[in-house]
Image 1 (cartoon, rainbow, N blue to C red):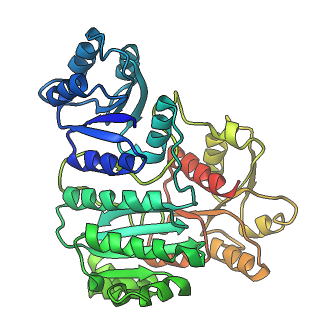
Image 2: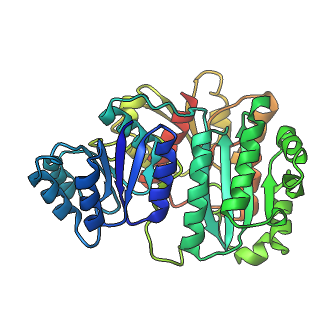
Length: 419
C-alpha cells in the first residue's frame, strides 16, 4: 500500500483527495499547514507528498529546505499545487525533487495521471466523455452538462458545488441543470441518479428548487423511478425553466444584461478566495506550454463568415502561426455554396450579414441535414438571440468585440470534440 501525504490548508481539497486516493487503495495522511506537514513527513515517511505552495506556520520553501536536509525525507517526490505562481518560482522548486507542478483550480485527471507516473502504479478512471461546468449568476447555480456522464466528474462535482456555495455565500441555492448533447445508455441510469443526489446533497437544496433543461426522455424516466428525484421539474425550453425557477421573467432579474459566451457567465464571488477545483479534465502546469493548434490539428479548415473585413483579418491573424486553412466569406450566401466542396472543421458565423444572415444559414443547414461545428459570434447580446442561436445546435456563442485568446480557445475546444 502506497502512502501519500497531502499538505494543504483547504479542508475541502484535502477531503477530496483522501476519498479519491483511498479508492485506489492508498493510505492518505493529511496535514493542515507547513509545520504540521513537515512533522508528518518525518514521522510517516510517505511515498509521495502533494502540497500547496502557500502554507502557514512554515512556508513551502522552509518545508522544502528542511526536507532536503533530512536524508530520510530528501528523496520523497513532491507534487506541488498552487494558484498565482510565476514561472521562476516553479523552476526554483525543481531542485527540491518537485516532479510536477499544477495550478489551481486543479484539473484532477492530470493530477491523478501525475500520481500514477511518479508512483509507477496504474490508476484506472472512468474515461467516458463528459463536460460539466458550474457557476453562479444572480444567486442561481447553473450546471451545464454535455457529451455524457462519468463517475470522476460526478465525484468532483460534489466538492465544486460546496466550494461555490462558500465562495458566493449561498446557503440554499436555486439550481438550473442544462443537459444538452448527452449520449446516455440504459446503463447510465445510476449515474443520472447520482448526479441529482449529489446536487441535492452538496447544494443543501430541495427538489422544487432544482430545474432541469433537457429533451431526453431517458433522463425523465430515470427521475420518475425515484420518489425524491421525481419531484424535480423537467423543461424542454430555457424560457419556461427560468420563469419557474425565478418566479419572474428572466429579463426582470437579469436587468437586461448581455449573455456572455454560451448562456450566462459567472458572477464575481462574494468571498475572496481562489477556487481549488477544475471541472474540465486534461492538462497540467508541469508541461512547459499547452499543445498548440498547429501541432494538434495541422491542415484543419476554418470558415470565417462575416461581412466585417476587420473580423476576417483578426481571425486570419489569430491562426497565422498555424498550418490551418482559413476561408473567408462576406455573407452566408457565399458560404453555403462551398459547404459541399470544402469539409470545414470549424465555422465562425456572424449573425448579421447582408444577402443571407447567420440565422438563415443555420436554418438552411438544418433543412438539408448538414451538421457542422459552428461558433456563432455577434454584437447581438440579448438573451433571446443567444437562445435562438443555441436552438440550432451551435457549438458555442461569442459576443463581440472578440478577444484573440478566446477565439483560439474556442476553436481548440470545438476541434478537440470533433477530431
